[in-house]
Amino acid sequence: MATNQGGVVSSISRTGAFEPFDLQVARGQITFHEAFCQFGINGAVGTSLETVWVGSDLYAFPASATTTTISSSNANDTAAGTGARTVFVDGLNADYERVTETASLNGQTGVTLTNQYLRVNKITVRTAGSGGTSAGSIYVGTGTVTTGVPAVILNRTGSSSNESESGFYSVPVGYTAFVNRWTMSSANATANTSTRFVLRVRPFGGVFGYKAVYNLPGTGIYECESAYPLPLPEKSDLDILSLTSADTAYVSTQLQIILVKNRTE
Image (cartoon, rainbow, N blue to C red; front, side):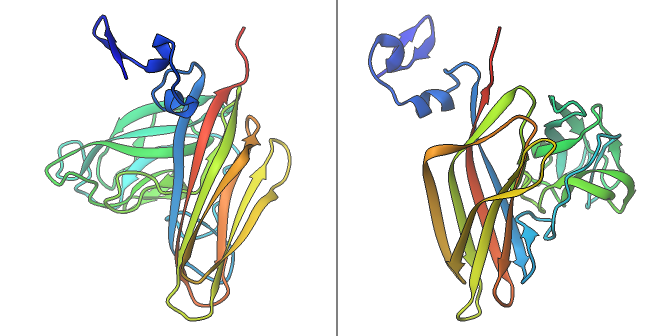
């Protein structure tokens, strides 16, 4: 049930009835709360631990913020091209403050971003040409850009995905993130294999510690919903790692997260 008050559709909770809290958060009705999904894929996890992201290796969190560029592996991803034209970047600066911007692409040539990024949590294509999607992979990183790929990659998209697919996240200063659901899947054509997933967290100034470890059949899916969400303190890093017992596997993961401001004066 909803009512129309001055042209605004109001939820039932605003008329004195009940509406689930998580739905209100998703609708943006709960101040200082933000719900989102952080997901990642890795198309070729082997027998050594790799981060679940399209980079298909063990991701290294940057040690410092520096000048950052955005570029594409395809020349058609440009301001007037048939591929991706503008991209939204969501990350953290040197003080772990959340910073965002929208940048226009210039194909395989790096475009310097306004902000200096210590972390890049998400990349999202906002506009595209006639192709309706990115023609290549979009990269945010530092150092020399060669055919669209920076020397150091902070985050990236897959080709034509229009969004980064990275199983890692860093919490902005002044906030706590709560993980309340985690989904894992694995596809390995080799018989009698298994795939291990590791969720680990590094508090600011500390070291990574395992928070959950799961073993799945070579091909399988598992969803974990926590009765008490896992809290991630401000400035902490989280990532999802995976490995197989044999051969390679296509793996994916999805984290449901609620970001909550610590306090207001």
